[in-house]
Amino acid sequence: MEEMWLTDEEIFELTEQFGTPLYVYDEKTLRKRCQELHNLLPNKNFRVSYSAKANSNVEFLKIVKDEDIDVDAMSPGEIYTQQLAGFPKERIFFIPNNVSSEEMKYAIDRGILVSVDSLSQMKMYGQLNPGGKVAVRCNPSTGTGHHEKVVTAGKKTKFGIQTKYVDDVKKIAAEYKLNIVGINQHLGSLFLTPEPYVAGAKELLDIAKQFPGLKFIDFGGGFGMPYKENEGRLDLKKLSAELDKLFTEFLADYDNKNVIFQAEPGRYIAAECGILLGTVHTIKDNYDTEYVGTDLGFNVLKRPVMYDSYHSIHVAKKDTKAKDNTKHTYNIVGNICESGDIIAKQRELPHIDENDIIAVRDAGAYGFAMSSNYNCRLRPAEVLKELSGAFRLIRRRETFEDLVECYVLDTEQKNKKRA
Ligand code: LLP
Image (cartoon, rainbow, N blue to C red; front, side, top):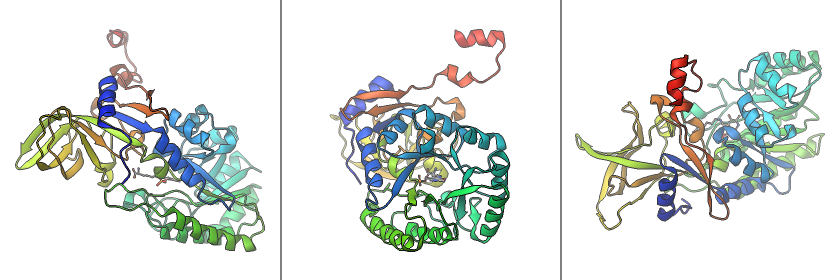
């Protein structure tokens, strides 16, 4: 596990200035991860497209763009945000699932390339944009991922088009005069060894052979990083060598020697540059379990509750003089009205007191992006640690007014809201 890029001194400075819960992102780490993937295959025509569902903060997107990384979108809302961050249409790839014709049209009207992931969505696309360019999402035989909920390929998922339908894809393309410019896939989220990605890439390249003249082949994201203290890093050198070899073999027989090989990582780029800070409000013992009660409910970070995910915890001690060196086994919990609201289970940590700060590491991906207003809780602020070391607010904390913004209020309520 990498060194913390935030000192305890900075943690207290930040929490005093901005309050908690607070997401903090490190620009240096973010750029480093972008560069590692950008340079993954220096000898090939290779592009990286950041999967913005991991973190869509506009300032975050601007940094990714500045690192010469493109972006993929899952929804019109993501397209909207990405265009706001300055991504031109050529650098956005729309990879939706089960969209309405209005949503598909949103991308077409803006000249953004769409990937279709079923025969019926391909027909819909053909009707909306006959003669247009399109990409087709394939579903290889096996997926991968840290939890069954994030495996997005293979026999048990809703995504992509099975290989046996290749002839139907070609028929629909001919019927609507569609130009299939790319094929794509996404195996699932989080692999820590090259094998599953390389095996999936092999399968997609076999399908690519049935589509001459492709402009790009996109192998999806899923690149993992170690959440646990004892986990090793994904061996990028090995992954690079294996993919390079595979691509060289493929190019020997493929008609378009300039085909672009693409990847769409989200987590690898966004996770490690994010830390979530929360305050300890309560320490209590309940039937022999020691609970640390914080403001880090699952409305703020959903991953532990949704996938039993592990995030490493750092404790910043408010009062260092009152040091108690005993280790404890704690359940770190939030302030939401559900027993499952546990951010870290049975974790061995130094003695914790009220007002200490809990720093949840590797929270930059699928952290804020999956946060909610459950229990009418306010979504947290986001701060960026710039390259200079200065901290800048990049999203303000929500207010009670934000909570009721979309309700249809009568005059009396509107007046109360303002008061
Ligand atoms: N491409 C497509 C089409 C995707 O659906 C995804 C993620 C990615 C790329 C990026 O995957 P990544 O490189 O981040 O693994 N909320 C879950 C992860 C869900 C991923 C959904 N799709 C989590 O917190 O672990």
